[in-house]
Every structure is written in C-alpha cells, then in structure tokens.
Length: 388
View 1 (cartoon, rainbow, N blue to C red):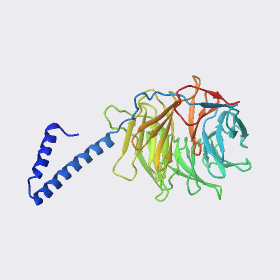
View 2 (spheres, one colour):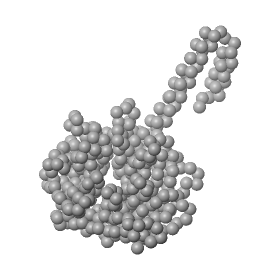
View 3 (cartoon, helix red, strand yellow):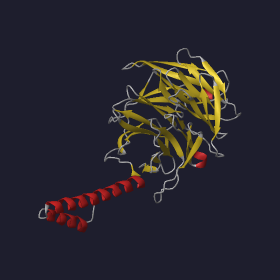
C-alpha cells in the first residue's frame, strides 16, 4: 500500500523499538499505529468516493439457467409477487393479470386469471402489492386502481389533477399508497381508509417523474430523469430533498436514471442507461454518490431490486440490452450470478423476486411472456422450458 522507502523506514523504526525503554516503546508504537490507521482510512475513503467497476470474476460469462417461459395474450409491462401469485400489467389490453403455480415438476400446472378495470383503455402501468391488495396506476385513465386479492374486485380512485399520467407506485409501511405523476410534476399519496388522494408539487418543471420507492416512511424517493435528479420527499418536514445525479469521476459523464430501490433505513440505489452504472447515495452521512461502472458498455439497466438474506444485502439488476439478470453482493460489489434470459425479440421491462423459493421473474413485452429463473441460477447448459 505504501512506497518501498516508507515501508523500509517503518520496519527500521519497529526494530529500534526492541532496544528502547518501555516508555519509549509505548510512545513510538502509538505514533506508528496512528500513522498507519490514518493512511489506511485515507485510502479507504478515496476508494469509496472514487467508485470503481463491478468485480466480474474470471470466466463469469453470462449463462442461462433453466428458464421457464409463460406465454401471455398481450405484452406485460410490470411484474410483482404477492399473495402467493405473480401479478402483471397488460397496458394495451387494459388488464391486470395473475399467474398461480399449482404444481411444479416435469408437468407444470398453473392458472392465469385476468381482471379488467372499470375504466376502458385506462392503460394499467405499474404495480405495488401489500398483504390484501394489488395497487396499480392507470396511466391513460388518470386513476389509481385497487384489486382485492381475496375476491378480485377492482376499485378506482380518480387523480385530482387531470391528465397527470400516474407512473410509479409503492405502498409504505404505514399503509399509504404513494405514486408519481409523470406529466404534472407531482408526488401524491392515497389513504386507503378514506380513499382521499393528496398531491405535492415537487418544484421542478418537466421532471418526468417515473419510479418511486416508499420502503422507508422517513423519506419517499422518486426518480426525475427529466432533470437528472433523485428527489426525496420527507413527510415529517413536508419538503423535497433534491439530489443531482452526477458522477464526478474523470470521463464518467452523465447517465439517464432507470431503476430505483431503497433500503428500509432509506438508503437509495439507482441504475443508469447511458454509460451504464449502479450507484448508492449515502443519505444522512457526509458521503454522496458511490458509483460502480457496469462492465458492459452496451447495457441498459432497466430495473433493480434489493434482497436481504441472513443480514446480507444482494442487488439484482435487469439488463435489457444484453438480456440478462445479474446478482451482486452490495457489500463488495462482487458479481455472483449472470443469467441470460429471453430471445432476440425480447424487450425486458421489469424484475421481481419471489422470496421463498428465490425465483426471479422477468416481464418480457417483446415476446409477450413472463420468464421464471429458478436457482441454481448458473447452470452450464441452456435448457429453455416453455410452460404448456
């Protein structure tokens, strides 16, 4: 870590300690230890601020696990897991769909169910699932929909601002349903007990709000690709925290924000498209963005999610350009798995994880299908299975 001369000098100092008095030995050792600690800390901080590249082990080529493909009657856009089912939106068909796996094995048994919102051509867009309901935005219908998992009944809530084109949606731990309006630069929340929607102007015109994450009630994060920002709304203070998405590393350039995922303590992760990267913003500390460049320059990291397992946090990312799903250890940015999915006509749009069996689900708008990737993820042969 240090230059040769400095290392030799310190070794010489350590030899002299053996011949010094006890007091001298103690004082000189403390000085040496302080110097070593400060230099080590400086190196660590420098590495954290500078960022780096994902660690792809030698031979970590993308492989394809046993991927099961479930054909759909229309193109899906978003996919989520909850209530023992896989939920997805079919925007062009104006439907919400569910897939229930009845039996696995050589003969796959499964059941599709489709639900139509009352408003015609409402374009169901993104999803959020809690213990009792599936919540979804209706981008063209200017509504928020609630589908009861128990009986399939859909209730709609009209957004107060006309033509707002609601996009991302999420359910907070306190039960509030948060969503963003892509055309009117507002974030809003719906209180299920009253059915009332309250809107907050984010203060930036043409923000193009897209994703939202309400994992932590202390700060609601949302992406604003129109102004290259990550915005955080703090309910306790009723204010917006603007964070510019800027990579200050030499030659790094800007990147259009795509995916968003936050930890339970409110730490947000994002992914970008141009010059594909992953980044974490250490909110509440003196640090800012910590960037990690994705090794494939052609990548488009369209979606990400976080999974906590045995106190360890893993980051999953969906690369739409190279048609693969990657799993990364967030503590050291070591790549664990790269799994190819889809075909040449695939347009991968969304990523979800079934936490019990660790099955990764991918929505494929190009092939009008859902793909299921089951562990072990890194099989050495390509064995696509089309569910019938």
